[in-house]
Image 1 (cartoon, one colour):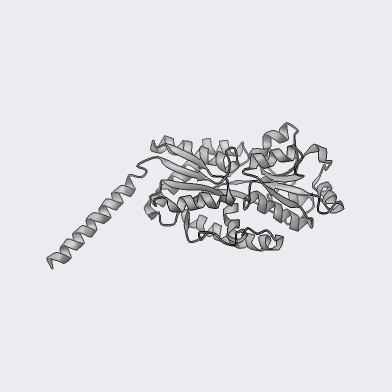
Image 2 (cartoon, rainbow, N blue to C red; image 1 turned 90 degrees about the vertical axis):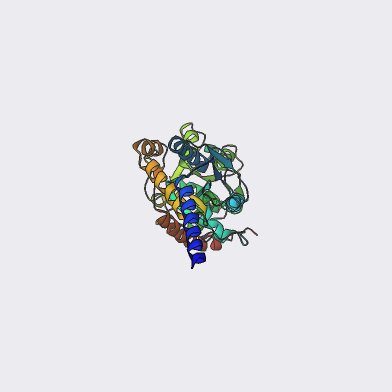
Length: 321
């Protein structure tokens, strides 16, 4: 009987110690993985959130850019780290697309990660170089159909949301175009300016300066509504492809084995940050809409995105072995 009581007491002490450790979160620097290069929309949002974490928790947030293999290397790093919540990852739409795009992933997109919260929704903008001669989306489609096999489009990398957006556009427009991956959205956009590729779907925050400078032309935005930053730029649906809609979203993940109290603590802070008037204004002036969710809502959203993108990726023929 005494041994049973002793075991029970030890269990209570162990659980109490674990609870206290979780209550003290964070206890050290936080590492935030970003699967794309510095200057990408994912990177910018990670740094904005990191600044606020530092203010609230007085713990440094180290943004760790690992722009390769469609985000799979960054994802694996999160899973190989300690499951204490101090290693996170800012992901974008491509995280859901990778479940279909890669024939052999070293992890399960749904089971191995836990959503903390969606962070933002951002339109992608279809851009071309002025020298291409396409002044509208219909012009671009006409050029692609007139010279099949000669059109290229760039993206932020294999499996990135910007690739998925491009593949969706190809299918909807009935054109062929070769995908050219880069290590981030800025590099993908620069190659449009340099003439190496013909078009790109760039996150609006990344493209905004180049559009205003006249280095690229904005032909359409991917979302169902126009962007207030460029009210004269039509949606893809308005420009000639009815029903087309693509939302470039971003969110925060941790390993699924992370204790739920820690996930909830980080979620509470994310929701507070995204609901603050200062952050709302900062995002909106850069073309992003804050999208705080519960962890459960973000998990369910990712599941739905995996299902939505699967037929698009399969139909496009895009595949990574």
